[in-house]
Length: 68
View (tube, one colour):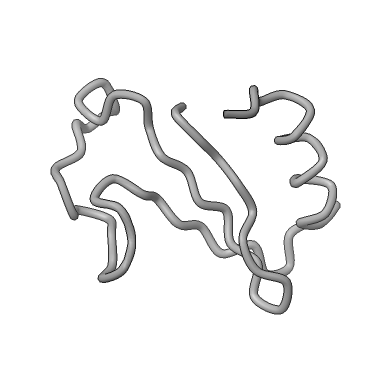
């Protein structure tokens, strides 16, 4: 995983970018999961109704992933 972060407060979303899109299963094509204005390999997952919540996910991502 190249990066992962939680974006947004009112409508939080997890945004993940794979390190090597060709190593995903199935391999990702540029723009396959992206929308205009996002990177070609970004995966976006809505976090509505997630428990324990987006703030807990933010803390865990900050703790486990290296900062760039």
